Length: 460
Image 1 (cartoon, rainbow, N blue to C red):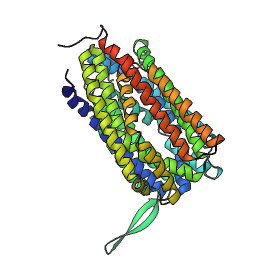
Image 2 (image 1 turned 30 degrees about the vertical axis):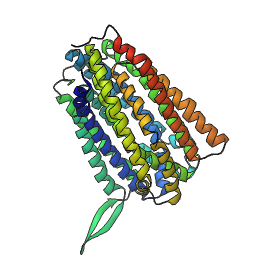
Image 3 (image 1 turned 60 degrees about the vertical axis):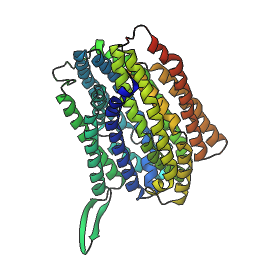
Image 4 (image 1 turned 135 degrees about the vertical axis):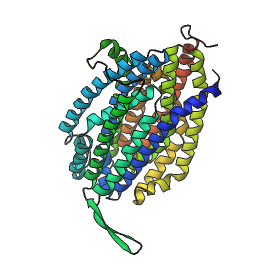
């Protein structure tokens, strides 16, 4: 299959995911700006537990990767019934995992800000925000895993549509729940706008309500899907389906858990630098997230298409995917990095007027902007490997990068040498560059051998 023939498929799968991520990032921008208007303490309180959210969310996402590989390969091999059976098993996992994490987060909500080394005067504020945000964990679990099932069969538009509505709900509820009632003047007319005045707890309640809607909506979409609906499938755990899914999911789960735990440790060291550093870090992370969107959109396309090709044992389709997606991804990430470098100060002004926060944030964002193209390559290679069900090597590479470079380096720089946020982000960039080297070498030395393997059929 020629490279140019893969381009429409890649774009058709990637753009809805990119739009979904863009909308989520826009809402994250709005959330952070609204909370930022309440002051630096509020921003630091919200950011204090954000990495725990990554830890739990990424662990759940790893289960989705296991089902993605199984379902994408089943569809590629023409075994649709196997895909439907896996969908039923995914429902069981959503119920078990969603309820488990709900219980854990509710029980530990008051302790997590302390473990994160949040400053004492904002620990209660951070705990209240976290507790409300995590009440609908079951619905958030459904949104993550069921969205992945739909993407595995090439339906990236349904999760996008649900995501857009979820984010709109979040924005509207933020507007009414965060701020107190106030008078707005338009022309010569004055209007009293209702408001609950709940502060950051209002932001958490808005997100919780939106996540609840999203979980219900994505479940309805999955149930009505013609190819992968779990309707009529057994919900009793089936080892013949769960075992291969978990073989793929477990290394990815360990990877995500270990790297997310690294994010928690990283954030704790940042929080220990003080409110200004913590606020600059939180805001810079929010700004930076928008510029990773091309990478994550391409990873979704890579995982689905490589899974289909691997299930069909189609060597030329795998080769065409790689030859098309790598230059496309590198170009898009180079463009996004250039934009981030140019507009970093203006983007930071959306969220804060604190001059020191702006100065620190601009410095670290311009540092990381230069590394954007290098970060995009391992994202796509990892997507290809996920679709093929090969998750052990990414686990090893990500854990090495996180703990041997980012965490160890940040500890030495901030705790032993007394450096600040800039040095910590330098260690983060070093982590990303190591991933580029390791994944690129793996691709050149291992993946091309797979392309030449005798058990992968070449279409003629």
